[in-house]
Amino acid sequence: MSSTQCTDLGRALCIITGASRGFGRTIAREMSGLVKPGSALVLTARSGDDLRSLEAELAESEAGRAGLVVECVVADLGQMEGLGSVVRASKEAFSEDIDHVILVNNAASLGDVSRDAKSFTDMAEVDSYLSLNVSSSLCLTASILQAFPQLPGLRRSVINITSLCALQPFRSWVLYCTGKAAREMMFRVLAEEEPDLRVLSYSPDKCLYCPVQPVLTIGHCIVPGPLDTDMQKVARSRTADPSIRKSFSDMFAQGQLLTCEASCAKLMKLLLEDSYTSGAHVDVYDL
Amino acid sequence: MSDINSTKPRTLGRGICIITGASKGFGRALAHKVSHSLEPRSVLLLVARSGTLLQEMKEELQSFTEEQQLGVHCIAVDLSMKEGVDEIVRVARKEAVNEIEHVLLINNAASLGDISKFGSFTDPNEVNSYLSLNVSSPLALTAGILQVFPYRTGLRWSVVNLSSTFALQAVPSWVLYCTAKAARKMMFTVLSNEEQHIKVLSYSPGPMDTEMQKDILRLTGVNNHPLPCQESVGKLMKLLLDNDFSSGAHIDFFDV
Image 1: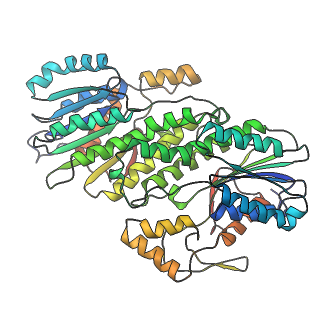
Image 2: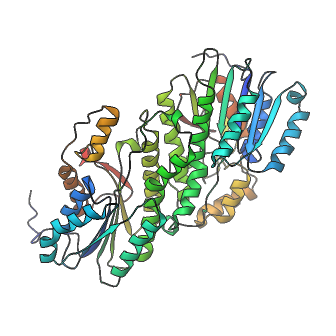
Image 3: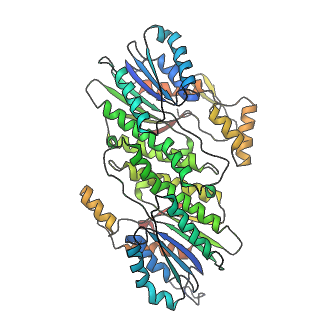
């Protein structure tokens, strides 16, 4: 394993789902600054407006002005046409110079965290949740790997944006925990099957709720709070468990949520160092 | 070592026992065994797709169940359909009028799915359909039955999730099965954390001489040296009768 850190991700094709907001949007911004000229980003989400504003922002950035290609695909990844459109856009954005294909499976939903497992009597609701959070990432990953098979000189990295909820159960979070646990296993199987593929399950935050204890890492002081996104906003207003809800609200009120930028910096560091064990679960606080 | 304080064999009480995937393999063997541990005026709900096989089972059990005053309902439905789950809940609801002491729900029905390389799963319909049967259905069924029999004092509630070592171990070419088993394990653990009055057990039955195992051999060439499923059923019964497992635990055949 190399101990020298790369300063860039290569001439890369980066495909990012759920890129319109939150962590996905930050990943798009950060990655755009770490890829070499001749790279391309394929950004997908269901919301066209948010994607287009991101596209415009990236076009104006240093990378954009240096020629970074940005393709936005408005798609529902739970449908074959949606998947197809992302794969097509990726193939079009690909060029012979590309030496790294990076797929970031970031798109996800929280599910209704105000209800206990015993309330999920409607199969359609559960099916719909699993379709977005599990099936679509399996099928997109499979399709991208088919479209960009293993070739000499081509690195391929697959990232699964995960959570502590993949490993630990939380009351009233049955859908989210189940989906994350499913995805984590899914990507572990992929890592077992494809030793040449780099597979990372990255958890952008760690504690659902915990006492405040700042963690020092590379000069940054990262407070162990949840990630500051729209998803967290929903979580802190809707979680059924009153102590978890209070904990979230307190952390928000005290400015203790972790910024997407701080967490994304850690993800970029992991990708640049490229020394993580394929299939492993790594979170923002792991040193 | 005999318990000198016990004067009668342990039982599961007067219960309603629902077993999915009851027409073959482990589910069928379990139905036979469970019926011997249920007290008079208990009810057995046997669920599978095949009405014929279920009817055959009902007949096999007939003389015993009549003698022991056990009601047996055969519910021939497809668990991947909402209507299938709803039908089971409907039948269970009719039984709710009777005083029962124990609700025992065995989520056993499952499918292998296509055992293929990850890269082959490009069709969301295939994956959705698989997850619907193997993940959504047991959640919706468990929730539905919980609604029919809410906890009250004196009511024992046991939920079993038929699990696998593949819930813990990532096995190449088994992405669908591993993913669903891992999902179910988490799902039932969350349930156990939420419901203090329910005992939830994820039971990994070990390799058994069932049609599923024959399919595995045919599809993968792997011989898992299966054991008779009665042995595994026996261990599950012991866990349920001893009833001292921690709720939410994942217990393997080889650990009992």
